[in-house]
Image 1: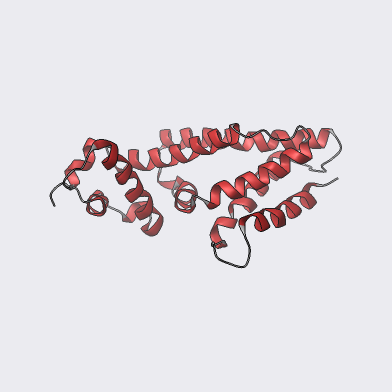
Image 2: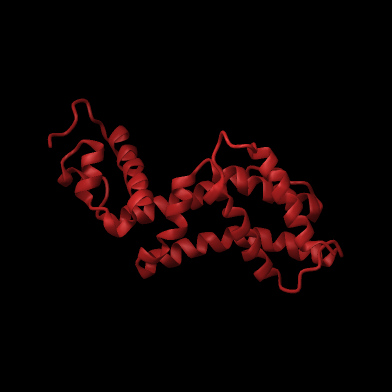
Length: 195
């Protein structure tokens, strides 16, 4: 298959990442070949190696990009100073951010098993950075007597799993809007940690 007329690196690189993300989300990393990714983009399979050394690097780049975007978006928010307000803000932020990136969320959670050890450690470090932000909110809430959480690490993992789970069932155009879902989930999170 010949390279698409007018293809440029600043266009083709993102198209390769988008195609890989869609295919990994639909079929799973192990089932997708570089040839399939190239076909979706409209380039020869060999041309992919101008943009990525291999499929593992492509997967790692997608996961790393997702986590870096998450951390950057979180850093831009001015959360309220008290732990209760910060927890509500974290809840709403997590849901809204992830519902805009369904394929990235699916790949980032389901394909961890396919990362080599070095890449896995790098992604887990980024994930821990994000988890630590929530755990710090919970610790401050416990110290202030607002939250009754026997183990802040387990509570952190449980809350993140619950919030991320929205991506498995929510679809736009359904009976609930994103803000309505955020409010329902905030009520559940608040009740689960309240003193």
